[in-house]
Image (cartoon, rainbow, N blue to C red; front, top):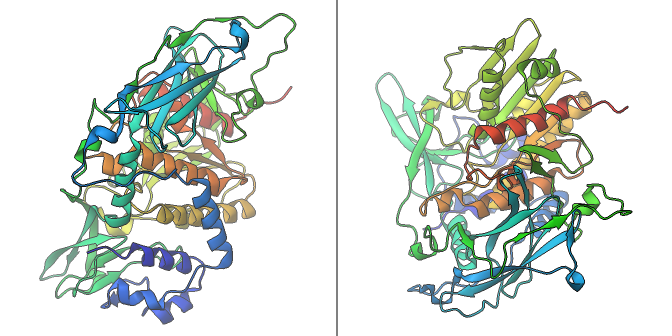
Length: 546
């Protein structure tokens, strides 16, 4: 039985733009724990209001901007014969015009041709590819921009900043994207959550989620009245909705696909594509009399997204005109953060930053608040230097161990309680727990946070707001349906679109992991985290001009 997520998304969009009293007319005291919905979401659909014209237009534009090429339908039973095969596919470094030598600052183009398992060329696009140019000796690396020509041919473009070797990786064949799309549409509740309810006589456990499948069982509605963020639990027998005390990751549904062949390590998932010729290039110093400066214009590709930076000698260098300073000592970090309040919100990849600062600054002492490490709140103070750092996990969905439900706070609500000012820094990262839900749900969460950011910057324009993006990671065949890089990349594009033009700074974790020689990991290794922190601190303490 399919869920009614499409209906629920309309409820999300309406509830974020309507007044609380309007919602309470449609659903008895909607959002309060005492509220119990006895009707299914299907019955509820007729009571939902449509999107406002402004919200509908923005959502349409965001979805349009991140649209993925059409991918082929999947036959049953599935054969790999006509699917993309990295072993048969190739990439070729295109020669420079007139066969001339390569020089620093030239653009290098790599042509990628996809073939199926029978050796026939593919005729359509939609494959998920990653590309990078790297030189391990120089500690150098840069991500390439992929263009899909929708006919089985792709290109990756780099600017040559040093000699290096190109690498192209097939993350998923286009056929796998078809299945990933189906899973998010038909099985958004494949990760499910549990809550415990307790009274003096009973303890009960029920299933919770953003979307619940219609049953005869009553439902407790925990939709947040301020943000409109939805959350529901099946009501336990003989207990009130107010008796909910905890929330935790209930598990993963299994045996939801018959397309396992499309997700095989070493066969067609995160596999390097071989070069049909040399994979590396030798470049000469810049030509005499030719002006050369690394700029966004130089590295801009196709008028679309531009690379945010590159590694050289293990150090990340920005391409937005700013300088990424190197905070190599605890005293340098302390000097930057002196007198600052830093609030961090998000998932465990955001908590990594809190832990990095806590470990790097000997005078920054963490308080033991006896709170769950996975969600916080976490708090550290350097009294002498007046540095205060906090971390709190974002609200559900959040895959955690058993934690008190009252500790689940939405980022937008937290931001509305921040006074802000020139000595306040707000940092958040929210992505890893949203991959298995429809992209519209993630867009709505970002819009809710953005409204809170706008309110914060309106009352305290000196506040520094920094966003950490998602990043490539390793995943198992079964984990692809939860943590696929394709899911993360789509959400990265949505985040960029939602916050484009607003006074926020991005730490491009996607490129910083992709361009580095270390393996992809949900929680990047220390050298990458160090560079991310350098970018963060450079936003907080920008280099003075002159």
